[in-house]
Each structure stands twice: as structure tokens, then as C-alpha cells.
Length: 100
Image (cartoon, rainbow, N blue to C red; front, side, top):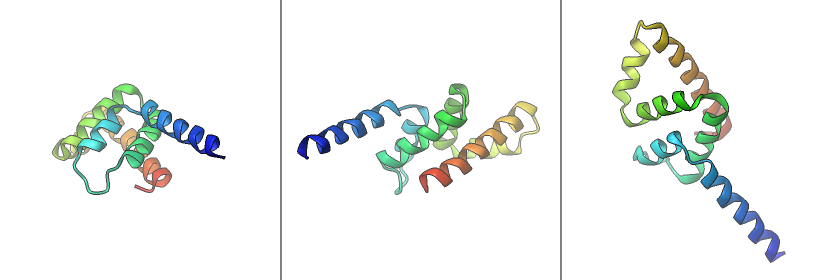
């Protein structure tokens, strides 16, 4: 029984470290009360499933600078509009999957 619990804990710790990425780092660094390792790791997992690595780096910047998010959202550039659509889909998926 103790071995099973230890093995499960090791798997969870490994999954958390494996999920570290730009979104996870930005989430943890955003100084929000609800941010914690489990939630930020979950959001990173959703990002891994829904955003390219390039989009993840760009989205991480939005975590750090919410005014930049407003600029992207209001932009008329096609590339910004396309990114914003992908970002909205990611955000909705993360909210549904992670409850954050």
C-alpha cells in the first residue's frame, strides 16, 4: 500500500515537472491569488493540446501584461485576429478542463 502511494506521488511530481512551459511559468509568476502549481500545470497541459509553442510564448506575454492582451484583441491585423481566436479557444478549454 505504501509503495503504491509513493509510486503515485512520483508520477504526479513527474507530470508536474513535465508540464512546465511558458504558460505554466507565466501563470505562476502572475501573482494571482488563485495561481498554484496544480492549476498552472493544468493550464499548461491544455496549452500543449491547443496552442503551438509559438502561440504559447505569445500567450505567456499576455499573462504578464494584460494591456498587451487588449492591444491584440483590438488589433485589425489578420495575424492578431487569428491568434486571438486561438487564444480564446485555449482559454475556454482551460476554464472548462481546469476549472480556473
